[in-house]
Image 1 (tube, one colour):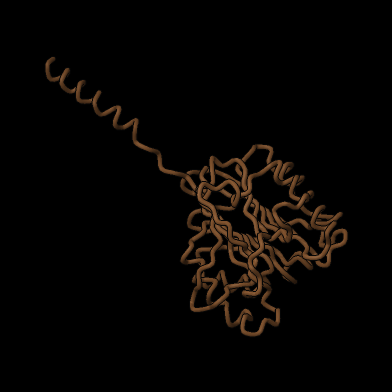
Image 2 (cartoon, rainbow, N blue to C red; image 1 turned 180 degrees about the vertical axis):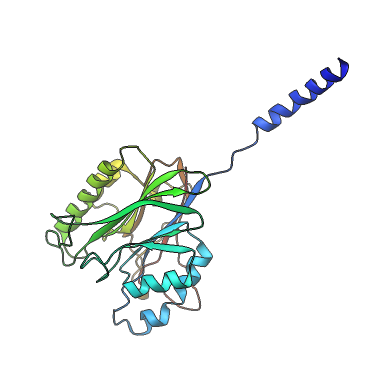
Length: 279
């Protein structure tokens, strides 16, 4: 009987220690990266010269998932070849297959599984390749429902690029994205939205998104006030690239990635932006 009492007393001392052990954090490292279209005549900043900086940047920052803007099919293929842990989801905006810029989502296949994904156009006819309102170009949003392998947690990810000229196209494109986000997620999964919006943070077109989601730059515990558009060093830095989130417990960090990789002065005319989200 004495041995039983001693064992029970020892066990009672262990229980509080076990219950106080912190659970492992379930988190997501997210990045948005306007890669600059590879067909542009950018001289010393042309894609073939600067492309080696992209896989180096990705290996150094190790996002779990990221969205690219302006990427042509050969740029998507280069990333997938150089960084085989990442798998792309996306289509060409001109034909819904391969032609033109891709707003691809890259996910780390070692950590994430895809449940479903698709693309819609920012236009009055979003289900088919089309140009919307006063836009200069076809514009798309790529979306995916994904699942973390370790925890089983599911989340949505949307990646987009708003028009650089059409004022109405930007406003109505953002409104369409806000409506789609509200409708696509009846189960209330956490949601991420990344992209080059081509608007500043005080633009009224962001009101619909701001009503549903949080801007990582604004709400991160540790944030960064640098601009994301650098114009190959000709700009002081403009805030037009965004990471928004909803349904996460918090965003601990937001960063504009201004580091130099492979001795390339500018990885793109935009700096990537990165956020650490906690479920």
